Length: 433
Image 1 (cartoon, rainbow, N blue to C red):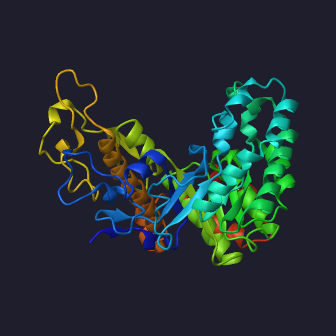
Image 2: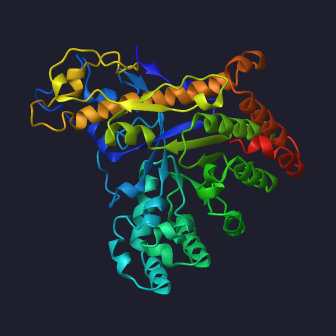
Image 3: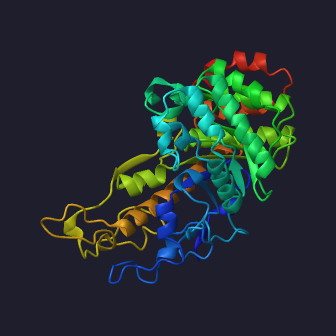
């Protein structure tokens, strides 16, 4: 019987692997295995679809999917568009990263615009782009992030991107335009998360004041408002949201771009604090594309963390995948444990051999590496939470004391009205994360 990891996440902040279209397309029910290509006996490409509850390998019902991968709202058949919506939940990313980097499809001409004022006017007139993004998210996603114009586009490292020219005020004004469009044009099928962001305490506060009163279904923490700004910053913002009643009237908060085991535990502690003091049904989530990048792009294998009381063991390690033309047709077993790993042979990965063949693995092989890595990430982040939130006497044996202490502190902060002095007194503990 296939493993279903979904139910075990009900009490924890949930990890959303950032699904990639090329993987979702390859593992969709409409795709056929290339004729003659070796594959584990009794399995199909659809078994690599972790969203598929009928997979013979394993199932996980959560993912993030970005509208920034598409230039049309039309239904491109893939594992996401053909999913069983009763068994899965998709959070849609609106493409803010692609907007900030200047790579959003349909905006190629923005790079030729010389002034910020001209660029802002072009975006105001780009109703077709907003319509495409909002329609795509409404069509395919249960939750979605609002369309934010990232403040980090102004940083020097992004000097060659279109919105680098814009001021903070201009980016806020354009984001308000986007939010007003969503409020007036969303069809109501999707719940929306208000994106909070910034690059430093000053512009983060400016953003918060500009958008805190917009009524949506939840929040998304991006930039230094999220984990990149450190735990102190995250706690500062989530406690401000709590003080303004922002968790009572919403039911979801997403933290962009992390899949580190300590943060998986910290975000669960925040979820527990919100559930205990504000909203018992509230959910926190976080995402990364790391399993796809590690397996599909770099052809590496993710290893299970060896969780101990040393915080340095609470991280993923990667090793090169067994990719070599010499393994063409090999029946040697894949040497790493996962549901797919149990049935995988090296000849299933290495399908191109010969002295002059530089890349023995094909797209199906990359998808198999990705499936293995996905399972390791999801299972390991789950187990990090299960260890940390066991009974105290058991958790003490397996979890770094500093991680347990900061989880207790987070619970105390959410139960306290005047949380600022307690936060300040405990900065030495907090800043370890």
